[in-house]
Length: 501
Ligand SMILES: *Cc1c(COP(=O)(O)O)cnc(C)c1O
Image (cartoon, rainbow, N blue to C red; front, side, top):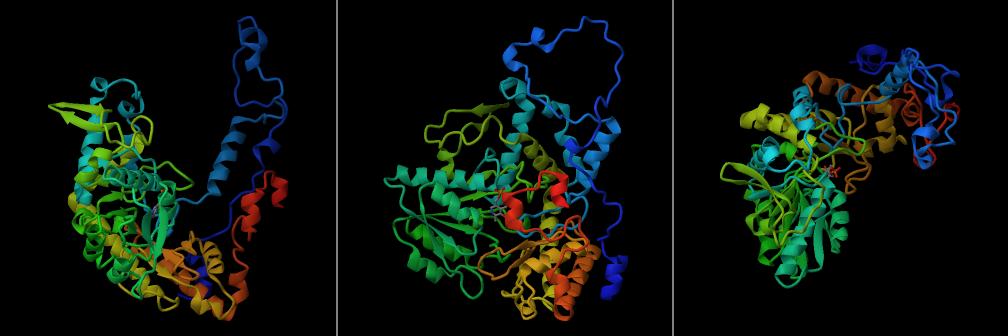
């Protein structure tokens, strides 16, 4: 496809009818309202006569006074400035921004789920407890481990929960130990989770394949190492080929292996963490198991453990006694509660619905398609972009800006230019082991047509970088606001419309 024709409308990006919108406080007119009620036949009383004085605010001024249509247009216009998986391709590496079937939403919205109260007790919560119990069992089967807690609210929260269990396990055996080894290809949250559990994070260099070298690991593995915390597939999108040797090296010194399983989308029905020698893993239901996410929540990051760690699982645990489901609080060695009540329950319903509607074969096929899609992009894009680790990848592939650097074009420019072509940029500058990284995760829900459009845009940008680098460096031009100073934007957000002009 020619560059010109892409910009002339063959790409998904366009411009018209994205409307300006002032702040809600700058709109409306005195006495304008969004309702009309019949004259009240009740005696009117001032609020001070009806409420305790402390609850009557005196200082509210300048609340917008608007009609219904003004309010509807305001929020609808703002929603159109946003970008979402339901609008288009969202290749944010490591985030698994796949399309989430709407049936999951319908089921999570059933009143039987939404109208229950966490204090209504086991006997009146049988359906909910059964769903949790069965979801625990399904997740345990998918990862090949023995027990699951559904409590953690996010991936990083699952990491914290898992590391607390590892600490409790070692403490029970005499000493919590001091260090946690973390490969430089692990996710950025891993060192933080270890540090929160009072462990010293020791970085392990990946080898030239972008993988963990069992020999380097053996050198670093000492008796004071509590765990190896790895991400598999790692953040380069590569499967740790020596995983069996890796876990053996750690276990030989009495250590445990934590796996960050947020990238499970590449493995469901294909490989199981339990079979790899992993002791604890967290999953991101809001990635692999089809809950919409972004913007900070909500999420669910269940942890799965091998039998020897089960005594430390957070309480309460969902269990089954004869034909009754129960929420149990007694577990003497538990690390305690990590979340109130039943966790992010609505997300558990979505995951349950997703797993049941896909079935074992469907889940496997989803993972296979995710891997095929990532490898399709890898082989297409490596003609225009530097691919530092050129191996078959799993769910994502990582390029760099090395070839474009010669023309002054950097990763940030390529990412911004993609917005002009109507695509959400990929994850950038992560993982840190690739200088100027562009981390692309297409997921299984994208069609070949979408992937081809994305490749065409990336090809066009590579061409522009060479022939007309300024157009890339000064991107985006076709968006609502053009280039922001990102540091300033985060520190000093514009709070009035006039600030934007
Ligand atoms: C997304 C992700 C996390 C963190 O998950 P949150 O739910 O955002 O806390 C951790 N590790 C990996 C590999 C991830 O992709």
